[in-house]
Length: 310
Image (cartoon, rainbow, N blue to C red):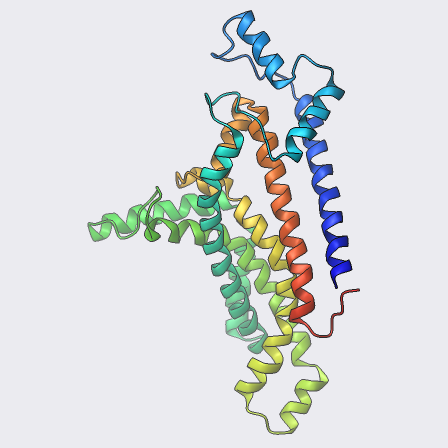
């Protein structure tokens, strides 16, 4: 077991190194100059900044400096935000994205398991048709469209009631989080619903379920102990990457709802060619995704006793 964990950790480190390397060389091939802004108004200041960040060195030397700083957990200093380190940006704003992501994951997982089980139990009947139609909409419609329609609905609702039932934008209370979390988790919930439906249909027709029915086991117990427990395993497998994807992928939702999360600063960094912020947040996102995949792989051996990690 421990040998498997160590092996997966080493694979994760290699993956993060590859992400960091690809990000470094990609950013150095992007047209533009990160120091062409108000901070580098004179040649002397520009020279000092180049020396500080190693931009006056050959590309190979810059890469070694980058890896050395990265191994020490130092992502550098923002080129556009004065006296602000990338580590501080991640430390201050990732918790906001994480809270929003956790709520979205809870919404997506609960809805996906529930609706997926219902569509399998009522296969080829009205509930199945309605839910699968909504699932197709959830997968097909882009998140920015759903976010804009959600805001329009909130504005209409608040105007009709004459008071603020749910805030249209902003951050601070649980009411600010509800609609953005549902919008962010909608696509994942639709995907999990389809996955749960397929898995549930396979389990329903299995031999052990037929045996339980022949022994007179109550339907509720068969559903909870045999069908749901076994059908949910594929959902758990993809839940780790889904958690990382939701937590780190709410760029559009954070922008539309004016949420001060890390994704919002990543988009601003791309617009302003803030190389250190782009590289730092990309590596952080990649490492978080790799970590979640490893955690799910390890936990899967405890969740399903049929799995033995060698």
